[in-house]
Image (cartoon, rainbow, N blue to C red; front, side):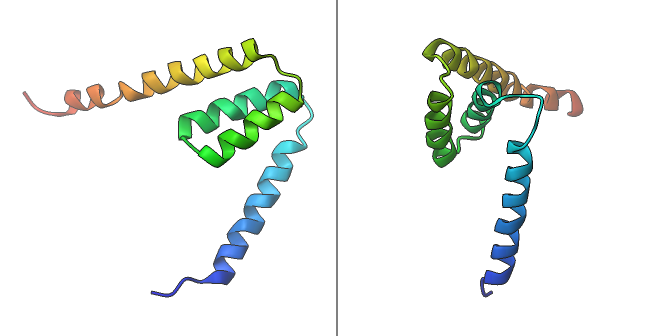
Length: 94
């Protein structure tokens, strides 16, 4: 199986359009949006994105305390999602 470079570039182009659309949102300013994005990067364990978002939240002047709170929300949500396998037991006959 050969890697199709044209499909890769098509994907990157599509991602670029999506990212630009998200950045042009008018209801959340960067100081609000970037801690949310950082929290999502943490949940998805995307190292490159985490590094980029940390830099961006700092540029927006987000305080260390607000960053810590956003990360606390991410940890909380991830812990809740981690409990999902317990629900699988409900589908298994006794």
